[in-house]
Picture 1 (cartoon, rainbow, N blue to C red):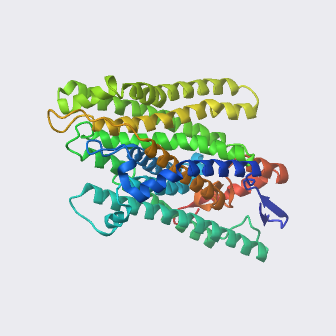
Picture 2: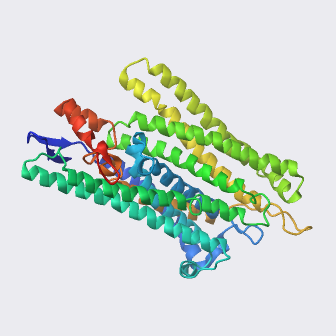
Picture 3: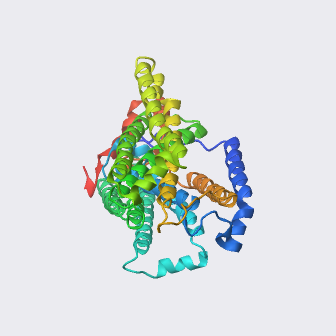
Length: 478
């Protein structure tokens, strides 16, 4: 709990999220340890003996690790785009998840780089991709865009933390001088606004970079492979962009609810309703992207494209396409979101707590989010493997790919690293907060209970005082 004083000098407590319980900490450690232990031997085999333990071949050089790589890179890009709803577009509804989106975007990008690193053969040679540059290489451009994107995201997050530190110091100085922590000076508001302006500029640069970095740049890289008709075309880049937003919105729905539950707090219903709407809209856009990827290919008569799509819809990948991509990725999430919305309308006529929980969709929204994330993983797997399903030369046998046990276990090992990094980020960084960068006067909890606690302890004026920071604008004070 962080303490300050009111204008009258009375002690004032600002509610921050409660620490995780010991049970939650042990559960997180057990999950991380189990994943790392399960894949440790296979990861050592990969590092010691190379790619021989993987199921990829010359005919299908990209396998499970590339699939998971583009899933995490899409998650990273999508999380950053959702954080830009606050830091660039200034939409206050999404303020409680802005930091969580930005911080976990950086973690997800690191995880994606680990996955692509273990797929690159001799890992020691990967340093060359960072040091050297070939103007005609799409991969070289993508790597540089990724590094620039990460630098922008880290700089933006550092400014957010710096803004918190300066705001806390200004509040302490005001309290010491007797001016009151709730009355920031015009100079303090101006400095706060200047930092917010820098954050907004970086957010704009990051969003622009996302068209050539994660997630759009990954789609451009696939589209540049001219020998693979399934990937060639502008719809591939759009598909990757939309998949990233679907993945990020679904991920945040689950993460925000889970963290609130582990903290013993209540999720902000307005945020969850907004995320549900983003997920529904992006699912609608994804359905169009999938249709325009499949239908023109089947009608074109081009064997290089039509044959790959036939493998998707009626060949060996058909079960994963119809059950995973269409069923889990599109139909089931849409149905669950619709049911959750209908139940929310009915609950709106009940008590306030029930209305808030019902409006946000409750377990229906979580089920839709989990289904959507699984469906996007299936979509990415089908997209990658189907792209290699047509032999490059006539008369050659059709390539077949099945992930090896080693590939799966290495993926589990890196997934353990990911869960560990996500947990450490949430524990060590103020990701579940709203502060000056999100329009609040003080560092506050991202959960609805903080306001309830403040109202109960200090009355309605306390909440109004907390919200005075929303008057801060870019470049100065209102």
